[in-house]
Image 1 (tube, helix red, strand yellow):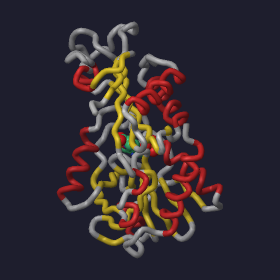
Image 2 (tube, protein in one colour):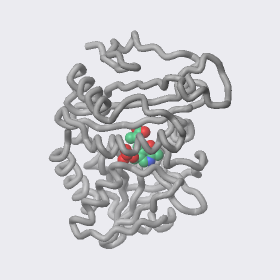
Image 3 (cartoon, protein in one colour):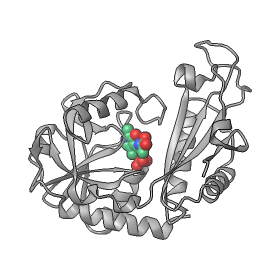
Image 4 (cartoon, rainbow, N blue to C red):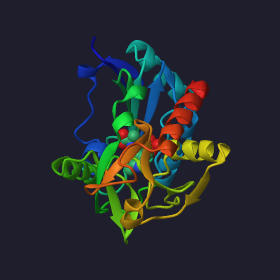
Length: 286
Ligand code: PDD
């Protein structure tokens, strides 16, 4: 089946969807994005992603090309047309095509580019990695200073994934001023005793939608949460570690820089949080 994608108001076969070479997303990485997961054909935390999308647009003085309700309809229509049961919907908005290359923003009435496409991931919630846990390495965080805006400038995170791959690991945790910021495409956590520790919000990390939900569920389950930065040494001495993102939900981390964390197997806190997250998110899915 040919994938149907969405481009500026049209549903098209993927090979017919074309964007200009002058698009600022292509020339300047002048674009933002969201990734929303789909389970059982329904959207997980659509409202959270819509709120963060608006925030990214506002921070960059970019116009919203659509309303939240219309965007929800496009997400649902793509799920229907592509018969997605489990997977993701990628959404990108760029500052559009000014017809030439220029560092200055184009006039405000330049139409933005809006693209959405689906990625099918059958059995996504039953990933074998949730049973084995993942391995991470630490690398320097060399990204720009506004990581709270979900921009498409993803070259350094891509380099980080390649560094992890070359080291035989699954991902990299990035370190700045001696403290972990986040994973290349996820938020990072350690567990010490009964306490879940994850970096506080700020410009240094993306404000994960999964993070917000998981911390809420953890507090509701009477778990202790500390939002503060932590070091690699603290992580090495932790009882457990895990990551969260829309595409991995809650995923245990069992090894850091070649050293086992805790027992070297997925811990009870990460495992329980994954169960709660999946159960509650499925209930609230739209
Ligand atoms: N990445 N931190 C970074 C740097 C991310 O790229 C992501 C998400 C997260 C987690 O955010 P959320 O829980 O809202 O997915 C944290 C997405 C999944 C991606 O780029 O594919």
